[in-house]
Image (tube, rainbow, N blue to C red):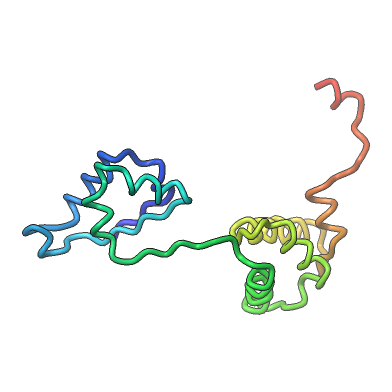
Length: 149
């Protein structure tokens, strides 16, 4: 199995080589399973005239849209429960994370991990909106030395 992330960045020649390497006996035998992951540009790339043979061989396609607010909140609650502390984040903080993740699971989980690191460094038992603001929107005065640097 070969997993290619950011596949939209690949040139058609490389994608065609992968197609050729993945099978034998005129597609009768599959030698390699390939998963192409990428953004919406990947779909455009696969429509390229040189990639028609590859595009017609793709068996399963999963095109995802931005996650809904409910889907993001459900994942966040599930992750906290599975991690063993369902009350680690206040409901308010979870709402803020969901609202600022732009429908992107990875962004929400990355911000959550940064908040967890921040909470560990500050030895807190529960994370709330205050920590979000401190971490992602610091409003401390800049010293004159830093402003000149």
